[in-house]
Length: 410
Image (cartoon, rainbow, N blue to C red):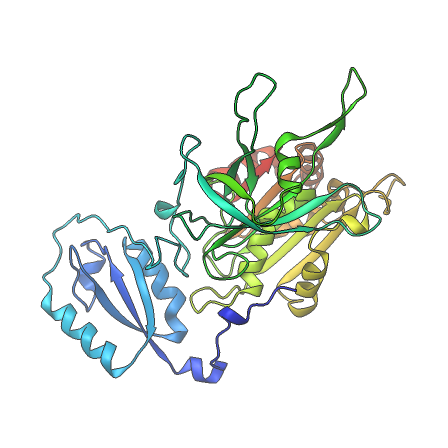
Protein backbone atom coordinates (compact mmCIF):
# COMPACT_ATOMS: atom_id res chain seq x y z
CA UNK A 1 0.00 0.00 0.00
CA UNK A 2 1.21 3.46 -0.83
CA UNK A 3 2.57 5.37 2.16
CA UNK A 4 2.48 9.20 2.12
CA UNK A 5 4.15 9.54 5.52
CA UNK A 6 7.32 11.11 4.14
CA UNK A 7 5.33 14.00 2.72
CA UNK A 8 2.62 14.35 5.36
CA UNK A 9 2.20 17.68 7.11
CA UNK A 10 2.59 17.21 10.84
CA UNK A 11 0.73 20.38 11.81
CA UNK A 12 -2.96 20.11 12.54
CA UNK A 13 -5.48 22.32 10.67
CA UNK A 14 -5.87 24.76 13.58
CA UNK A 15 -2.13 25.32 13.80
CA UNK A 16 -1.84 25.77 10.03
CA UNK A 17 -4.59 28.36 9.86
CA UNK A 18 -2.57 30.74 12.04
CA UNK A 19 0.84 30.11 10.50
CA UNK A 20 2.75 32.42 8.17
CA UNK A 21 5.13 31.36 5.41
CA UNK A 22 7.92 33.12 3.54
CA UNK A 23 8.09 32.71 -0.24
CA UNK A 24 11.46 33.31 -1.86
CA UNK A 25 10.66 34.47 -5.40
CA UNK A 26 12.81 35.23 -8.43
CA UNK A 27 12.01 36.58 -11.88
CA UNK A 28 9.09 38.94 -11.18
CA UNK A 29 8.64 41.23 -14.17
CA UNK A 30 8.08 44.95 -13.76
CA UNK A 31 4.60 45.85 -15.04
CA UNK A 32 1.52 47.87 -14.21
CA UNK A 33 0.46 45.00 -11.94
CA UNK A 34 3.70 44.80 -9.98
CA UNK A 35 3.89 48.58 -9.70
CA UNK A 36 1.09 48.29 -7.13
CA UNK A 37 2.86 45.74 -4.95
CA UNK A 38 4.28 46.62 -1.57
CA UNK A 39 7.59 44.85 -2.07
CA UNK A 40 10.43 45.64 -4.48
CA UNK A 41 10.80 43.95 -7.86
CA UNK A 42 14.30 43.12 -9.02
CA UNK A 43 15.96 41.91 -12.17
CA UNK A 44 17.93 39.26 -10.32
CA UNK A 45 18.19 37.77 -6.87
CA UNK A 46 15.27 37.06 -4.61
CA UNK A 47 12.16 38.76 -3.32
CA UNK A 48 10.80 37.56 0.05
CA UNK A 49 7.02 37.60 0.51
CA UNK A 50 5.25 36.78 3.77
CA UNK A 51 2.03 34.84 3.14
CA UNK A 52 -0.62 33.49 5.55
CA UNK A 53 -1.46 29.82 5.14
CA UNK A 54 -5.01 30.65 4.02
CA UNK A 55 -3.72 32.55 0.99
CA UNK A 56 -0.87 30.30 -0.14
CA UNK A 57 -2.56 29.02 -3.31
CA UNK A 58 -3.86 32.45 -4.34
CA UNK A 59 -0.43 34.04 -3.88
CA UNK A 60 1.23 31.30 -5.92
CA UNK A 61 -1.18 31.89 -8.78
CA UNK A 62 -0.60 35.65 -8.62
CA UNK A 63 3.19 35.23 -8.63
CA UNK A 64 2.96 32.92 -11.65
CA UNK A 65 0.80 35.42 -13.54
CA UNK A 66 3.48 38.06 -13.01
CA UNK A 67 6.25 35.81 -14.32
CA UNK A 68 7.70 34.94 -10.93
CA UNK A 69 9.17 31.64 -9.81
CA UNK A 70 9.03 30.42 -6.21
CA UNK A 71 12.44 29.10 -5.13
CA UNK A 72 11.50 28.05 -1.62
CA UNK A 73 8.71 28.12 0.94
CA UNK A 74 9.62 28.23 4.63
CA UNK A 75 7.63 28.74 7.84
CA UNK A 76 8.03 32.32 9.07
CA UNK A 77 10.67 32.71 11.79
CA UNK A 78 12.37 35.74 13.27
CA UNK A 79 15.53 34.91 11.33
CA UNK A 80 14.07 34.52 7.85
CA UNK A 81 11.74 37.49 8.34
CA UNK A 82 14.69 39.73 9.17
CA UNK A 83 16.85 38.31 6.39
CA UNK A 84 14.07 38.63 3.83
CA UNK A 85 13.34 42.23 4.74
CA UNK A 86 17.02 43.16 4.63
CA UNK A 87 17.60 41.50 1.28
CA UNK A 88 14.53 43.11 -0.25
CA UNK A 89 15.55 46.59 0.86
CA UNK A 90 19.07 46.16 -0.47
CA UNK A 91 18.07 45.50 -4.09
CA UNK A 92 16.97 47.96 -6.80
CA UNK A 93 13.86 47.54 -8.92
CA UNK A 94 14.08 45.60 -12.15
CA UNK A 95 14.13 47.21 -15.54
CA UNK A 96 10.83 47.00 -17.46
CA UNK A 97 10.53 43.75 -19.40
CA UNK A 98 13.09 41.87 -17.34
CA UNK A 99 12.90 38.15 -18.09
CA UNK A 100 12.07 35.73 -15.27
CA UNK A 101 14.93 33.52 -14.15
CA UNK A 102 14.95 29.79 -14.62
CA UNK A 103 14.89 27.87 -11.35
CA UNK A 104 16.21 24.53 -10.25
CA UNK A 105 15.81 22.72 -7.01
CA UNK A 106 18.90 22.20 -4.86
CA UNK A 107 19.30 18.60 -5.95
CA UNK A 108 20.31 18.41 -9.61
CA UNK A 109 17.41 20.39 -10.98
CA UNK A 110 14.70 18.08 -9.70
CA UNK A 111 11.17 19.48 -9.76
CA UNK A 112 10.04 21.52 -6.78
CA UNK A 113 6.92 20.86 -4.78
CA UNK A 114 4.76 23.58 -6.32
CA UNK A 115 3.06 23.03 -9.67
CA UNK A 116 5.00 24.28 -12.67
CA UNK A 117 3.75 26.85 -15.14
CA UNK A 118 3.61 25.89 -18.83
CA UNK A 119 6.93 27.64 -19.46
CA UNK A 120 8.66 25.28 -17.03
CA UNK A 121 7.62 22.00 -18.63
CA UNK A 122 10.76 19.84 -18.94
CA UNK A 123 11.14 18.37 -22.42
CA UNK A 124 13.86 16.18 -23.98
CA UNK A 125 16.39 16.48 -21.18
CA UNK A 126 17.76 13.20 -22.55
CA UNK A 127 17.67 12.41 -26.28
CA UNK A 128 17.96 9.09 -28.15
CA UNK A 129 21.58 9.70 -29.13
CA UNK A 130 22.52 10.31 -25.49
CA UNK A 131 20.00 8.54 -23.25
CA UNK A 132 20.13 8.48 -19.48
CA UNK A 133 21.01 5.07 -18.06
CA UNK A 134 18.82 4.36 -15.07
CA UNK A 135 18.47 1.25 -12.98
CA UNK A 136 15.45 -0.95 -12.34
CA UNK A 137 14.80 -1.15 -8.61
CA UNK A 138 11.37 -2.80 -8.70
CA UNK A 139 9.31 -4.87 -11.17
CA UNK A 140 5.97 -6.08 -9.80
CA UNK A 141 3.03 -7.89 -11.41
CA UNK A 142 -0.23 -5.91 -11.42
CA UNK A 143 -2.60 -8.54 -12.86
CA UNK A 144 -4.11 -10.72 -10.16
CA UNK A 145 -4.58 -14.48 -10.37
CA UNK A 146 -7.11 -15.42 -13.03
CA UNK A 147 -6.50 -12.28 -15.08
CA UNK A 148 -5.50 -12.04 -18.72
CA UNK A 149 -1.91 -11.40 -19.76
CA UNK A 150 0.79 -9.70 -17.75
CA UNK A 151 1.20 -6.07 -16.74
CA UNK A 152 4.05 -4.80 -14.61
CA UNK A 153 4.68 -1.76 -12.42
CA UNK A 154 8.33 -0.81 -12.84
CA UNK A 155 10.31 1.70 -10.79
CA UNK A 156 13.59 3.10 -12.11
CA UNK A 157 16.26 4.87 -10.10
CA UNK A 158 17.09 8.20 -11.83
CA UNK A 159 19.11 9.77 -8.99
CA UNK A 160 22.37 9.71 -10.97
CA UNK A 161 21.07 12.12 -13.61
CA UNK A 162 19.00 15.22 -14.18
CA UNK A 163 15.76 13.64 -15.42
CA UNK A 164 12.71 15.49 -14.13
CA UNK A 165 9.13 15.30 -15.31
CA UNK A 166 5.53 16.26 -14.62
CA UNK A 167 2.36 14.22 -14.24
CA UNK A 168 0.97 13.40 -17.69
CA UNK A 169 4.30 13.24 -19.50
CA UNK A 170 6.00 10.23 -21.11
CA UNK A 171 9.51 8.84 -21.28
CA UNK A 172 11.17 6.81 -24.02
CA UNK A 173 12.72 3.41 -23.41
CA UNK A 174 15.40 1.99 -25.74
CA UNK A 175 15.41 -1.81 -25.37
CA UNK A 176 18.68 -3.70 -25.41
CA UNK A 177 19.72 -5.64 -28.49
CA UNK A 178 19.25 -5.17 -32.24
CA UNK A 179 16.48 -5.69 -34.77
CA UNK A 180 16.46 -8.21 -37.64
CA UNK A 181 18.64 -5.83 -39.66
CA UNK A 182 21.28 -5.62 -36.98
CA UNK A 183 20.39 -2.07 -35.99
CA UNK A 184 19.70 -0.94 -32.40
CA UNK A 185 16.05 -1.09 -31.46
CA UNK A 186 14.10 2.15 -31.70
CA UNK A 187 12.69 3.72 -28.57
CA UNK A 188 9.10 3.26 -27.44
CA UNK A 189 7.19 5.87 -25.47
CA UNK A 190 5.40 5.04 -22.22
CA UNK A 191 3.20 7.26 -20.07
CA UNK A 192 4.72 7.95 -16.67
CA UNK A 193 2.74 6.34 -13.83
CA UNK A 194 4.28 8.28 -10.92
CA UNK A 195 4.05 11.86 -9.72
CA UNK A 196 6.94 14.27 -10.24
CA UNK A 197 8.30 13.14 -6.86
CA UNK A 198 8.34 9.43 -7.67
CA UNK A 199 6.75 6.59 -5.72
CA UNK A 200 9.17 7.13 -2.82
CA UNK A 201 8.56 10.91 -2.71
CA UNK A 202 12.30 11.61 -2.93
CA UNK A 203 12.53 12.91 -6.53
CA UNK A 204 14.83 9.97 -7.35
CA UNK A 205 12.59 7.57 -9.28
CA UNK A 206 10.19 7.32 -12.21
CA UNK A 207 7.58 4.57 -12.66
CA UNK A 208 5.89 2.90 -15.64
CA UNK A 209 2.88 0.65 -16.08
CA UNK A 210 3.68 -1.78 -18.91
CA UNK A 211 1.56 -4.53 -20.43
CA UNK A 212 3.37 -7.17 -22.45
CA UNK A 213 2.18 -6.93 -26.04
CA UNK A 214 1.18 -10.32 -27.41
CA UNK A 215 -0.59 -11.11 -30.70
CA UNK A 216 -0.90 -13.70 -33.45
CA UNK A 217 1.01 -13.12 -36.68
CA UNK A 218 -1.67 -12.63 -39.39
CA UNK A 219 0.08 -14.94 -41.87
CA UNK A 220 1.88 -17.57 -39.82
CA UNK A 221 -0.37 -17.68 -36.78
CA UNK A 222 2.75 -17.57 -34.66
CA UNK A 223 2.56 -15.79 -31.30
CA UNK A 224 4.51 -12.54 -31.44
CA UNK A 225 5.64 -10.59 -28.39
CA UNK A 226 6.32 -6.86 -28.38
CA UNK A 227 10.03 -6.07 -28.32
CA UNK A 228 10.12 -3.26 -25.76
CA UNK A 229 7.21 -4.41 -23.60
CA UNK A 230 8.76 -7.86 -23.28
CA UNK A 231 12.14 -6.31 -22.50
CA UNK A 232 10.58 -4.30 -19.68
CA UNK A 233 8.25 -6.95 -18.31
CA UNK A 234 11.14 -9.43 -18.03
CA UNK A 235 13.59 -6.90 -16.61
CA UNK A 236 15.38 -7.98 -13.46
CA UNK A 237 15.91 -5.68 -10.52
CA UNK A 238 19.33 -4.07 -10.77
CA UNK A 239 19.34 -4.07 -14.58
CA UNK A 240 20.23 -0.93 -16.52
CA UNK A 241 17.66 0.81 -18.71
CA UNK A 242 18.17 3.52 -21.34
CA UNK A 243 15.69 6.38 -20.86
CA UNK A 244 14.93 9.43 -23.03
CA UNK A 245 12.68 12.43 -22.58
CA UNK A 246 10.51 13.44 -20.95
CA UNK A 247 8.07 14.45 -23.69
CA UNK A 248 4.52 15.67 -23.85
CA UNK A 249 2.48 18.74 -23.00
CA UNK A 250 -0.98 17.45 -23.96
CA UNK A 251 -1.87 15.47 -20.83
CA UNK A 252 -0.65 17.72 -18.03
CA UNK A 253 -2.66 18.02 -14.83
CA UNK A 254 -4.11 21.52 -14.33
CA UNK A 255 -2.62 23.56 -11.49
CA UNK A 256 -6.08 24.55 -10.21
CA UNK A 257 -6.73 22.55 -7.01
CA UNK A 258 -10.48 23.10 -7.41
CA UNK A 259 -10.68 21.78 -10.97
CA UNK A 260 -12.98 18.98 -12.09
CA UNK A 261 -10.87 16.25 -13.71
CA UNK A 262 -12.68 13.62 -15.80
CA UNK A 263 -10.48 10.65 -16.73
CA UNK A 264 -11.42 7.88 -19.17
CA UNK A 265 -8.93 5.02 -19.41
CA UNK A 266 -8.57 1.52 -20.79
CA UNK A 267 -5.87 -0.87 -19.59
CA UNK A 268 -2.47 0.74 -19.18
CA UNK A 269 -4.07 4.06 -20.10
CA UNK A 270 -4.48 4.29 -16.33
CA UNK A 271 -0.79 5.28 -16.04
CA UNK A 272 -1.07 9.09 -16.23
CA UNK A 273 -4.21 9.02 -14.12
CA UNK A 274 -2.43 7.08 -11.40
CA UNK A 275 0.04 9.97 -11.31
CA UNK A 276 -2.83 12.49 -11.17
CA UNK A 277 -4.65 10.72 -8.36
CA UNK A 278 -1.55 10.05 -6.28
CA UNK A 279 -0.69 13.77 -6.45
CA UNK A 280 -4.28 14.82 -5.68
CA UNK A 281 -4.90 12.51 -2.76
CA UNK A 282 -2.02 10.35 -1.50
CA UNK A 283 0.63 13.06 -1.45
CA UNK A 284 0.19 16.03 0.86
CA UNK A 285 1.74 19.36 -0.14
CA UNK A 286 1.25 22.75 1.48
CA UNK A 287 0.99 24.37 -1.95
CA UNK A 288 -1.39 21.86 -3.59
CA UNK A 289 -4.50 20.67 -1.78
CA UNK A 290 -6.96 19.16 -4.22
CA UNK A 291 -10.52 20.23 -3.39
CA UNK A 292 -12.22 19.58 -6.72
CA UNK A 293 -13.78 16.45 -8.23
CA UNK A 294 -11.84 13.63 -9.90
CA UNK A 295 -13.89 11.03 -11.79
CA UNK A 296 -12.19 7.95 -13.26
CA UNK A 297 -14.06 5.74 -15.74
CA UNK A 298 -11.85 2.67 -16.18
CA UNK A 299 -12.33 -0.04 -18.79
CA UNK A 300 -10.75 -3.50 -18.30
CA UNK A 301 -11.41 -7.09 -19.37
CA UNK A 302 -11.82 -8.83 -16.01
CA UNK A 303 -11.76 -7.90 -12.33
CA UNK A 304 -8.21 -9.29 -11.85
CA UNK A 305 -7.14 -6.90 -14.63
CA UNK A 306 -8.15 -3.78 -12.69
CA UNK A 307 -4.73 -2.21 -12.28
CA UNK A 308 -4.03 -0.57 -8.89
CA UNK A 309 -7.47 -1.75 -7.74
CA UNK A 310 -6.79 -1.65 -3.98
CA UNK A 311 -5.44 1.88 -4.04
CA UNK A 312 -8.22 3.19 -6.29
CA UNK A 313 -10.89 1.76 -4.02
CA UNK A 314 -9.07 3.11 -0.98
CA UNK A 315 -9.31 6.57 -2.52
CA UNK A 316 -13.01 6.08 -3.19
CA UNK A 317 -13.57 5.14 0.45
CA UNK A 318 -11.47 7.93 1.94
CA UNK A 319 -12.50 10.75 -0.39
CA UNK A 320 -16.13 10.07 -1.39
CA UNK A 321 -16.83 13.77 -2.01
CA UNK A 322 -13.82 14.29 -4.25
CA UNK A 323 -13.25 11.00 -6.06
CA UNK A 324 -15.68 8.98 -8.14
CA UNK A 325 -14.73 5.55 -9.56
CA UNK A 326 -16.64 3.77 -12.33
CA UNK A 327 -15.58 0.44 -13.85
CA UNK A 328 -16.47 -1.06 -17.23
CA UNK A 329 -15.50 -4.74 -17.03
CA UNK A 330 -16.11 -6.11 -20.52
CA UNK A 331 -16.09 -9.86 -19.86
CA UNK A 332 -18.13 -9.73 -16.65
CA UNK A 333 -20.63 -6.90 -17.03
CA UNK A 334 -23.42 -6.40 -19.57
CA UNK A 335 -24.50 -3.16 -21.22
CA UNK A 336 -28.15 -2.14 -21.60
CA UNK A 337 -28.44 -4.15 -24.83
CA UNK A 338 -27.06 -7.33 -23.28
CA UNK A 339 -23.64 -7.13 -24.89
CA UNK A 340 -20.26 -6.65 -23.30
CA UNK A 341 -19.76 -3.56 -21.14
CA UNK A 342 -17.14 -1.26 -22.65
CA UNK A 343 -16.06 2.18 -21.51
CA UNK A 344 -18.24 3.94 -24.09
CA UNK A 345 -21.32 2.28 -22.57
CA UNK A 346 -20.46 3.66 -19.14
CA UNK A 347 -19.94 7.09 -20.69
CA UNK A 348 -23.37 6.74 -22.30
CA UNK A 349 -24.97 5.85 -18.96
CA UNK A 350 -23.44 8.92 -17.31
CA UNK A 351 -23.46 11.21 -20.37
CA UNK A 352 -25.83 13.78 -18.87
CA UNK A 353 -23.73 14.11 -15.70
CA UNK A 354 -20.53 14.32 -17.73
CA UNK A 355 -22.04 16.94 -20.03
CA UNK A 356 -23.13 19.01 -17.06
CA UNK A 357 -19.64 18.89 -15.53
CA UNK A 358 -18.08 19.87 -18.84
CA UNK A 359 -19.98 23.16 -18.77
CA UNK A 360 -17.76 24.33 -15.93
CA UNK A 361 -14.82 26.41 -17.22
CA UNK A 362 -12.36 24.59 -14.95
CA UNK A 363 -13.34 21.06 -16.03
CA UNK A 364 -10.65 19.10 -17.86
CA UNK A 365 -11.42 15.83 -19.67
CA UNK A 366 -8.73 13.24 -20.41
CA UNK A 367 -8.84 10.09 -22.55
CA UNK A 368 -5.95 7.60 -22.49
CA UNK A 369 -5.74 4.06 -23.80
CA UNK A 370 -6.97 2.22 -26.89
CA UNK A 371 -7.83 4.52 -29.79
CA UNK A 372 -10.97 2.51 -30.58
CA UNK A 373 -12.84 3.99 -27.61
CA UNK A 374 -12.86 7.54 -28.98
CA UNK A 375 -15.71 7.09 -31.46
CA UNK A 376 -17.96 5.47 -28.86
CA UNK A 377 -17.28 8.23 -26.35
CA UNK A 378 -18.03 10.87 -28.98
CA UNK A 379 -21.30 9.13 -29.87
CA UNK A 380 -22.42 9.00 -26.24
CA UNK A 381 -21.64 12.67 -25.62
CA UNK A 382 -23.26 13.68 -28.92
CA UNK A 383 -26.60 12.48 -27.54
CA UNK A 384 -26.15 14.48 -24.32
CA UNK A 385 -25.16 17.62 -26.24
CA UNK A 386 -28.12 17.37 -28.60
CA UNK A 387 -30.49 17.29 -25.63
CA UNK A 388 -29.18 20.76 -24.85
CA UNK A 389 -29.32 22.03 -28.43
CA UNK A 390 -25.53 21.86 -28.89
CA UNK A 391 -23.45 20.18 -31.59
CA UNK A 392 -20.95 17.95 -29.78
CA UNK A 393 -18.18 18.22 -32.37
CA UNK A 394 -18.27 22.01 -32.20
CA UNK A 395 -18.30 22.05 -28.40
CA UNK A 396 -15.43 19.57 -28.34
CA UNK A 397 -13.41 21.87 -30.61
CA UNK A 398 -14.05 24.73 -28.21
CA UNK A 399 -12.78 22.64 -25.28
CA UNK A 400 -9.66 21.68 -27.24
CA UNK A 401 -9.02 25.32 -28.05
CA UNK A 402 -9.42 26.21 -24.37
CA UNK A 403 -6.98 23.43 -23.37
CA UNK A 404 -9.68 21.44 -21.57
CA UNK A 405 -9.90 18.33 -23.80
CA UNK A 406 -6.86 16.02 -23.67
CA UNK A 407 -6.42 12.79 -25.65
CA UNK A 408 -3.58 10.27 -25.80
CA UNK A 409 -4.59 7.03 -27.50
CA UNK A 410 -2.77 4.29 -29.39
